[in-house]
Image 1 (cartoon, rainbow, N blue to C red):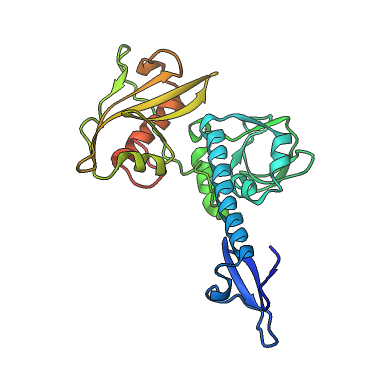
Image 2 (spheres, rainbow, N blue to C red):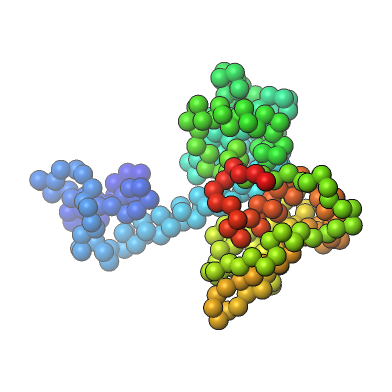
Length: 285
């Protein structure tokens, strides 16, 4: 952003998300000062700029969270909506380089640009930049991508760094030997979390309700929620994990055989992250 006058001999601006100042005196070099001068610390313009920086941080986090929800639920997003949000740097930063699918599910590509008319410019697996004009576009969950390995390898070649986990998101497939009547997973039962579980869950983007940590996805026309029970000792801040189950929101608990591939993967991902059983992303069981 541009530099704004503050006081008699300084200008202020946001540099890398923080308030910075530079001198406007006759010997000024025009470079930002290493620290904010004492004369500006109580300046109302500096305070307003700090509030703007905090709002921009919250806005960027909200954009990332919204795009992450689009990915986890593989929701079709109207191209017109993408066109409206793309000029915003926070939205563009969250969306750029995600794998997107238009009208043809066999033609995924890395999103590089969205025109003001809703056309999408993507780089396909042949390395060509092509233009889509779909009514809506899907940002698929990785379990929905048949070319996941090829896309991940090509992303490495392109130097793609996705802000929202998609290609490097940890995924887990459903075992083939599930029993039809089973409704819970007990693999994580008894695992202990040494620090406050609620804080850990919030940091990882999950929701705590009562004695459960939850995550939701939209799949097959319904909202499915994975829930991990826990028992926390507030005296020593240690939590013990319990069973993991899935249910339709405001509906019945699902048998494990009824859980869809995305809800399954996201539920196991949540339990794994809470227990610390796997670190990093892109790992599978």
